[in-house]
Image (cartoon, rainbow, N blue to C red):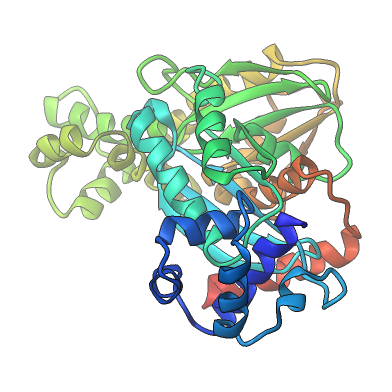
Length: 382
């Protein structure tokens, strides 16, 4: 008996009949946990339950057991876990996106290991209830720096049964987001920023030690510099600028009146002020230029430190929506041989390809990418 096939058929028919696991369990006189185990391929129903299942799901026992009764498209789950939010998608082997789920940060250094694990398992479990995947890959910020990857992978593996799973750094999401790159320098410019040297197998990190220690180069650092410019003006040794005007306009009051809010809401609240610097810079503000040049000095320094001889530098993360500012600033600070690549597809796409690799599943790139882009764009619009 092929447990994986049987699990997929039970889940497929149950969902098609709009029956929940709890409802099916009640009708069969078993626990919801038992139905969950059937649908995870951990065990099979006995003959009596199998016959009753077929009747309730309006199919034959042969359909549940036979590999010849129709092709089930294999599905996979990919996770892009960042410092602010986590994106999880369920997709098929030909690139169709079945479901997208968003939750909070799963970076264990930001929210704690227990909360990070709970959010990860909850999100994966919700998508598994739609269709049983053949593999799961989770690229999560902070799991390597804190040594959390092994424990989170063990928890995910226990939750998913026999399905191949892998938990690693979210930098692999960046690297895989560009097909055909085996050796590179990868950069994440988001709420936090870090740089990695990748030789096709090993990853070495530069920076990314968190907001308490990095000092510059991230969305948090830029946002903090914006707010500090406001405090300097209030203290009498700073100067009024477009940065300070825009920051106060964004707050609706002088920043010092929100001091308690900044401390209470922390890093993400402060990082939300990074766009102020970019807007002011585009409008010719000198203070904004000082802030951004100082922070890009730090990013460029880390890239040069990570130089492993590769000509490819892949840059991803939330700040890349300001590519028009970032690219020329970094270009003038780096060796001419380095080619800067800003992926056009979202970081979750890299996690999607990593999930396929985890399950040793190949696909036609042209078909897969077209389906993914169309479905993903439709989900964002919907």
